[in-house]
Length: 262
Image 1 (cartoon, rainbow, N blue to C red):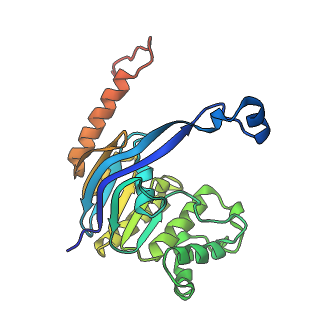
Image 2: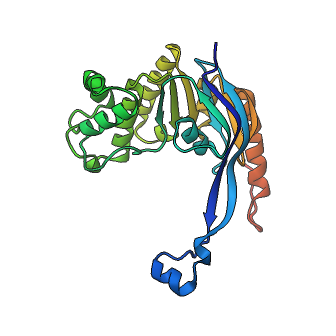
Image 3: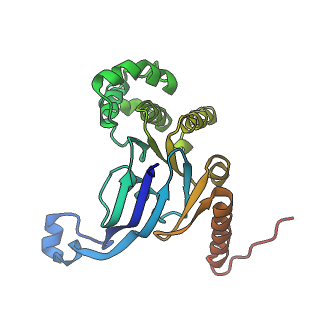
């Protein structure tokens, strides 16, 4: 059986600009155009290779800036790698950035149609599933209100409900489940477990290492843009937490004294 995801020698480069970069053409004319150019280039991901079998739930851990969100965006087809290749077999659904693809002036209903079609459904298919989308999101009272009046939690509910109703073969989730109330988070986790039991592949980025260990079959640990480890979730999370503890101790501000716990 073909892998659901195959990543080989993946690399993604970004530009970093000067902190006092001119904000207007007038400033650039007065101060010169040199600082409009990138100050440096850096690799958000470099030489990353892994494969994921169908039906697996995989967690991705790493400190802020490790390249986790960049990896998920590339897997979801947002942007192109500068090196290497990505092969994804199946329809991809994702919650990559809260509110991405939503228009604040459109209603929740209209946004559901737009995002459902972007997710690979026909307009007729979205219409057939709309009642279920609204019911799961628990937004019946607000579905015909413009999205600009929605809280971040309400937007997350709608985005998650749309994503799972596109029936993805591969579901990508980037931290957005941290938004919203606990009851709805638990409801989402149950639905994720159901999607997994039906054979979908799930890749989730989260700082909740307990959730990663409990729900995920395996784990990827990214460190400064490189794949540090891949394996069963408990062992990889243990390595990551040990490294994070070491990092915290070696990066304490000078003069700080940490008292041992009682």
